[in-house]
Length: 223
Image (cartoon, rainbow, N blue to C red; front, top):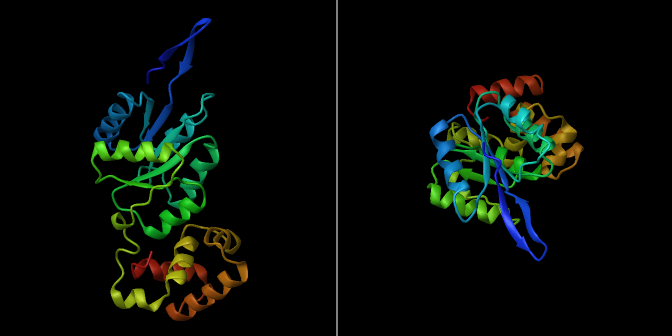
């Protein structure tokens, strides 16, 4: 990591202006280094740091100098879905946190955005396109390439039809360990409605309770 400063001329002389900082949290070293090189080059001039695990990322966020941008691989070691994403967002209050993934679940991505993430950049995107998206996000926008990620990947058509889209969302968030109140906040619903959806899920899946429903959902490929 380089900590260079860029000179800026003023009437009084020369002042120092810090470079924007980007944290690339991805255990795919070659990709992370390629992204870092692209962000460091002109005209962007980012100062970059690379981490390869959730713990390394959380440690990096203890720096006194905040990151302006965090590209977060949702499947690197230590990540536990939405919970880990929320932990990073909570500790990076001054950063734009962007998910980075080659295969992301649409429901999870939407929930992450609802909790403050600035969108998703697919790993299938070219480096040139990726840095253009970074420019877009740094301008204050949210980037969600809807065609690039799957809503539910492993369930058969018949299984998908078993649960409504909202029930699938509730089941997925339940599997992330969220309470009914947290699920309601994430989905913009009320807690009573979430409880009703959970009862319907248990009935349709013939589950004894919410934990059993999550187990069955995993077995069926619904989550």
